[in-house]
Every structure is written in structure tokens, then in C-alpha cells.
Amino acid sequence: MDIKAFLFYLFGLVAVYAGLRVVTAKNPVQAALHLVLAFFTSAAIWMLLKAEFLAIALVLVYVGAVMVLFIFVVMMVDINFDKLREGFWKNLPAAMFVGIAIVLEMAFVLLKTFIIPESAANTLVVPVGSSNTRELGRLIFTDYVYGFEISAVILLVAIVAAVALTLRARKDTKGQDPNKQVMVRRADRVRIVKMASEKRQ
Image (tube, rainbow, N blue to C red; front, side, top):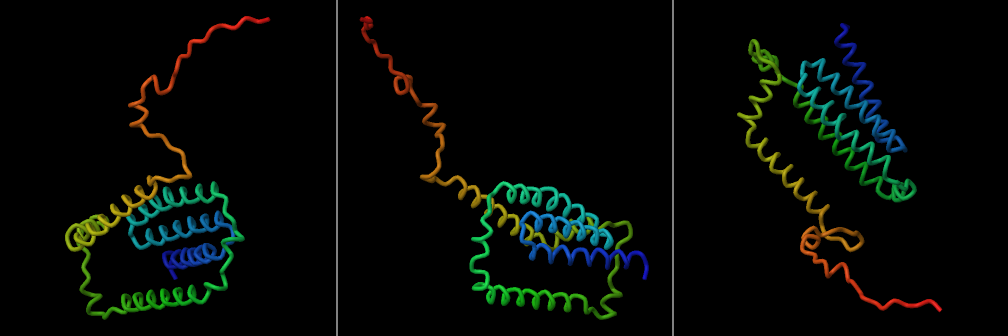
């Protein structure tokens, strides 16, 4: 076993352990930190597979932005753990069914992907002087351009929906209307009253 295979199995074991701790940790902060560890080990595996662009994107986007924001949100929000644990055994059969279905689907996809005939494997030719970043960009903007554009539209719709849900009018919150603030007049806010002075007895 060479050093590359040893590092692959080492990072794989760490990623599996981190993934298990994400779903078994009782503290959400610990679960988020283990998810950061899983992202880092996945990035290391991608580096071993010479997918430098995907590894850097995983570290910058997920670890550097999403997970840091998630950790801050979890630490700031007061979570009632007793309420979260309610209904665990009631929803366990449905959760196990969904989990088993996901495992079977992933196993089918992986088995179908890695069982490649030798003739098909020998026809894979890597162009000289090309990088995975260039090939990924070429595939995205040529063969998969429609899927890429559709995913961009879906993300745009999700952003608009998130903004619309956040900015909706609610009765239990206080806010300011800039239009009313600009159109206000002095007589609406201040009234000068002239009163006769009183003498002390």
C-alpha cells in the first residue's frame, strides 16, 4: 500500500466518523463542528483525486461561510432540547424507511458507476496540458449548460422567496416606514401650546 492509498483510507475513516457524530451528537454545536471536520476531510480526499477546484470551493463556500454562519446561529438561538426530542420514537419508522431508501439509491448509483468494462475504461483520454478546472468549466458551459442555467434560476427563486418571507408584514413586530417618515410634517409631531403663567401662593 502506497502513501496515497493510506491517506485515502485514513481520510475516509475520519470522514465516516465525523458524519456519524453529526447525526448522533446531542449538542448541535458539536454536530456542526464535526460537520466542519467532515468537509475538511472530504476536501482532502478531493485533493488526493486531483480535484483541486472542488476541494477549494468546498472549504471556502461550506466551511468558510455556511458552517460559520450555522455555528453562530446555533450558539445565538436558545434551543429547547426537550421539545426537539418529543416524538422521536413516533417518527422513527418513517425516518428509518427514508434512510434505508437513500442508502439503497446511493448503493445502486455507486455500483452502476464503478462497474465499468475494461474497454470503456481504456478509451478515457485526458488531454495534455489541461486541468480539472478547465474541463469542469468546459463541461458546465457546453454539455450541461441547460442544467446549469436551470439550477441558477432555481437558486434565484429561492433567494426571492426567502426575502419575501422575511419582509412580510407581521403584527407582532415593530418597524418603520421610511415613506411616512419623509412625508411627516412638523404639526404632526410638535404642538406649541401658549399658557398663562401661574403665580405661587
